[in-house]
Length: 166
Image (cartoon, rainbow, N blue to C red; front, side):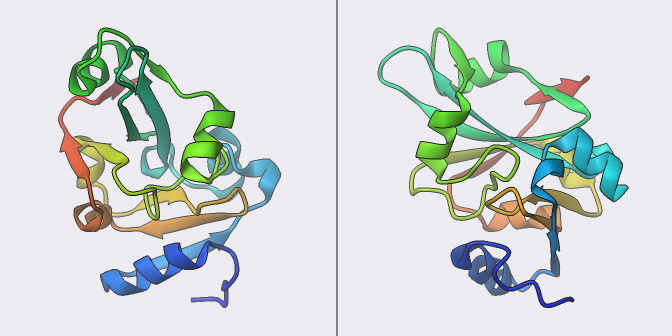
């Protein structure tokens, strides 16, 4: 592994080390952090790139979850997410709110190191992959990890049909 210290938030790297799972931290050009540009430039299959999408209920009390979905899929916000949130309506959280809630920029949001109580829901098909690429907590790094990482996260559920192929 190359020396990539300083590319991720310290708590993210500490968590990765503590899991005992193999991982790689990849540097990423900030202008290429968004999924399509990242996959094309760094030659990563889109099915291995997992997007982090923060969703919330539109009615009180506000409920939220960070949904982890392969780049080849579309999140089912109107049915699966809405029902799991127990809401009449659900929506994507705007980038500025995502930043305020997670402390991370869009294009770099990761399920590691989230505020306590923020749930993580993972599209079940992700668990069948050999490896996945996640945001590194910022737009200048990505994480190559095993999907087994999700079993080590607090408040994380694997959800069947959370997303459908695009």
